[in-house]
Image 1 (tube, protein in one colour):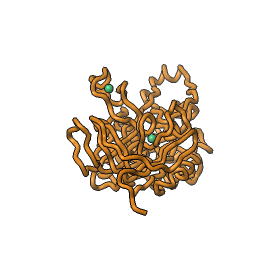
Image 2 (cartoon, helix red, strand yellow):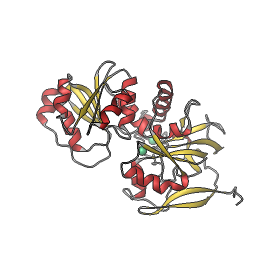
Image 3 (tube, protein in one colour):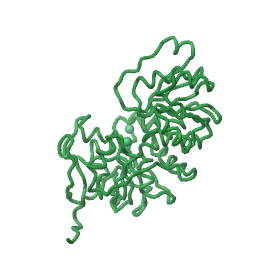
Image 4 (cartoon, protein in one colour):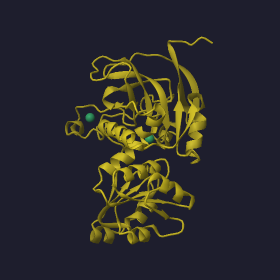
Length: 340
Ligand SMILES: [Zn+2]
Ligand SMILES: [Zn+2]
């Protein structure tokens, strides 16, 4: 069959829970945007926002916010990027540049920022249109498949650690060695921390050590807080996919002034002891992805220190299968769709 050059293939959500392959018309990017020939796109747990309609979604909608590809067309008014350049698009769809937060340099909290694959079409596609202000620059040393999961899982853990109060040599724990955590352990090790990996089961011990952890705590057989305390107490605990109970459990393992950074997108309440907050001066924070520049740094740091996600790839047309595998928790550890 001859390839139609005025259309491209995409996998879109047509109604809650239903992903379908579609042929879509090729459009030029509007002002401030670029068009990208997507080469790879990671499948993230947060794609459930679109697939399962966790936020109001106008269907059909193409999910995907870990997209890597080459710029194909530059829209009016875009400066600093060129055709053929390989770029990444993450969850934050591009800041506005004029709201109060942007003007204060806080691009993550821009009040006029859409989410990629949620309010506009994302990367489960051969082509996507993205706002230039959200683009990240992909170094030549990283393949598109390797770069893709770093655009959400990578930047989230990298930024959380980089912006944390922990300094080289401090005890830092990564709670949950899954999609986010297996990257978090590697970043923490390469940033020079004494790294503790926490998960359930003995099989994760070997993997955690391989990823660079100095210690492993099996949460199914030991008390996490006590085990951390025995190691001297953590300056920072990064709680990845875990819910409120894990955050509360980690709090007891902090040293004075330590902080738990929660990355798990869950509405499970966190039960805390005010005593602990008061007498140990500890804190609980959340962290949401990062700025485009933090994304550049994530990719560059990953290339420099050989940090990589463990991925399973599937061609674009098998997106529904890839999504289901990721949601089942069976993926080791990130699914990446390939377009070429
Ligand atoms: Zn803004
Ligand atoms: Zn994500």
